[in-house]
Image 1 (spheres, rainbow, N blue to C red):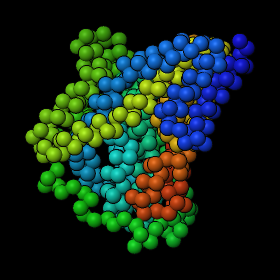
Image 2: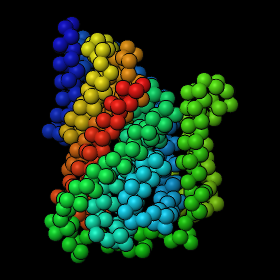
Image 3: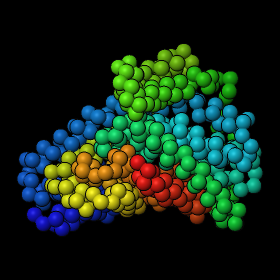
Image 4: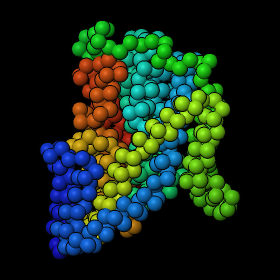
Length: 446
């Protein structure tokens, strides 16, 4: 089979997924099964081997990532119920100057709260960000809104245990400790560079309250009830343990491998599944003595509700990767890219960006893009972690009206459509480009 046909057929399979979702309003999970089904049949694999590849790909990826996603989402649900985020915001308000707050807010969202699902984290953070903006005054509303958008999306795609970051690490066989350390090394500088550039635009009159903000009678009210009563909140040191402890354990395991210490105890402690399980146990124990039974039950219910769709969408991306591997596309791509380490990074970024613009799902676009390149990684001189981060980075480009988060952002911050484009679509797209440049710079070093 000619190389050009394999490449064109794979691209058409991706296009088919996009068309099914956009024009035929097919559920993304069904579309992500139809794509690899077409690819396998049109590549001459036969019906039986194609179905087997789809099934095996789903099972293999779930075997790597299923428990991690379940544990991570459940930890996030308990952090929500324990009021951890509200406690952190109070600490930020007491610690940082008004001009520093957007940077601090976004950094905390990126580095500490990745396990909380994106829409839930937005609903938690938006009222607090608006309340903070009221205290600061001036153009603080767009600054805080931009900080929230950049923070939650970088957390989702680049920082363990963000759902997309976990899935990308599994698709590309990236050790989670490596994903955590390198992801933070890219994401945190991206926060500061992106917000600096966004604030530069704001100082040049980019924001117009008359056209970018809803009138006061239409905007959501900022009231004290939005911030959980401090007397009833779980102490901050306790509420953050379920996420801090597993992250430290994973980082310890990564350092053990990086330094070739080969200490069995450190390897056991750094096992990602065990680390997140320990975090979940901590969350259960702390909640048992500090959170009402109804809230504990609600946290479990929320986690099960959120994780079901996440697991299915993640698993079917594994199906695509398995079918792609059987078509020989990986060998073709490795032949094209073996001499240039930047080319595969740019390819996966562009594919993820195009998919996201079309279908509106950050996680699905990142995982689908990574699945295309996964079979070629064994023969490329590119660290898989950088490919994973490039896929996550590309999936952030141009968050717009196809995203549910876009409309949540508009509603919770009381902005017009134009204002939401300015405070979500623009800064997150800027973060996408900035992070790509940092990833390319890192590829030149490694």
